Image (cartoon, rainbow, N blue to C red; front, side):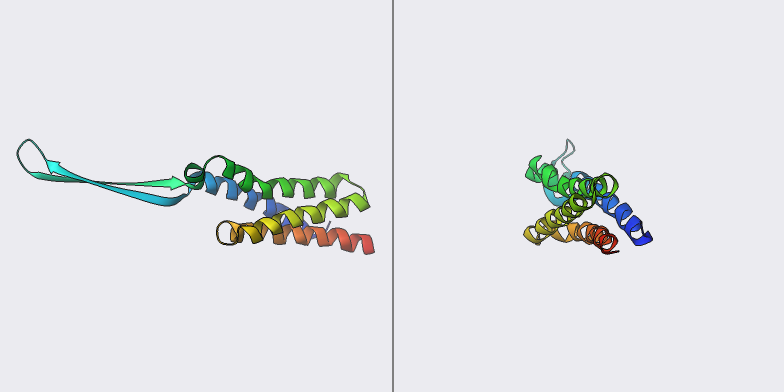
Length: 135
C-alpha cells in the first residue's frame, strides 16, 4: 500500500471522529438571557447568561446518525481494502466514496463542507485500489 493511501486512511477516520465530537461539543447557536432587578439595598442588578447549544442538542439525537455516516463509510473502505478480494474491494471502496459525496452535496449549506475531506481521502484510497488492479 502506497504512502498516500496510508495517509488518506489515517486522515479519514480521524476527521470522521472529529466530526462526531464536533457535533456533540461545539456550540452552533447561543442564547442570551438578561434579567434585571433590585437587591435588598435598592441597587439595580443586571444578570446576563449566555448559553451555547451543540448541533445534537439543538436538532436531536438523529443528527448523530448523519454525523456517523462518514465514519461508517471509512470503516467499510478500510475493511474492503484489507479483507476483500479485488472485485468486491473496488465496489465497496467506491460506495464509501459515494456515500460521503452524497452527504457532502446534500448538506452543502450545513455540514457538507466538513465531510469533503473524508470524501477526498476515501477517493485517494479508492484510486489506489483501481491502480493496483490495473498493474
